[in-house]
Image 1: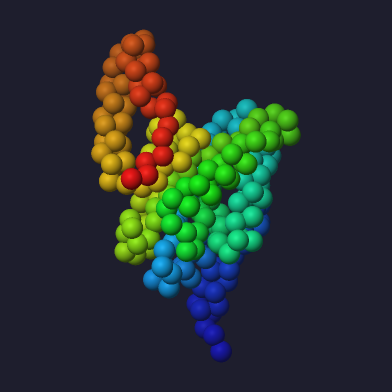
Image 2: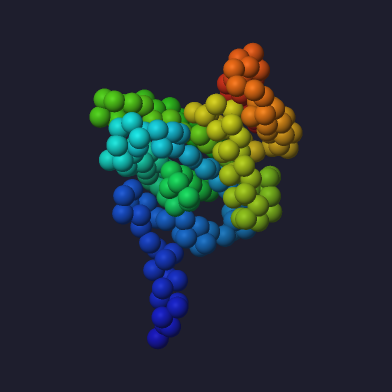
Length: 212
């Protein structure tokens, strides 16, 4: 007979998120990257969830999350895995794209980014996502490293203006250092220095995919 701890662990691995009907992040523990030639890990972050909740109410925020989930679920029909990532904000999703190289992952993800923002939620607002991609074994030799780098790439997308895709690269890390420096510079200037703020917005507002 299975112990109580083993039963609980099995239940956690197969736990489904009530709102989106997607597996929760614990399901990721079952994925062994070494069983595949290549795997791309994609992090999706719903942009501006707090603003959606504050402006339209939490019900609309939930609808936005369900809208993303319903689109990403299509990836499961192609043999991939999609998870709800319950972080501090609860606005993230993870797609594990098996036997998918970085270039193909970027193309496929761009297709879903456009699908997600195409329709308005209850006719009120469009949903956008910031996306980060890291690929095994190109970007790392184990799951933890790929997760970390996909997460970094996603935050790079958010810092660059949101509603875009970033594929992890060493070049991205160098650009991130420059962006963080510029952001700190702006944070330290006096109120009303519009020229520097404008230069930050121009610097961060043009989005490109960092495919090497």
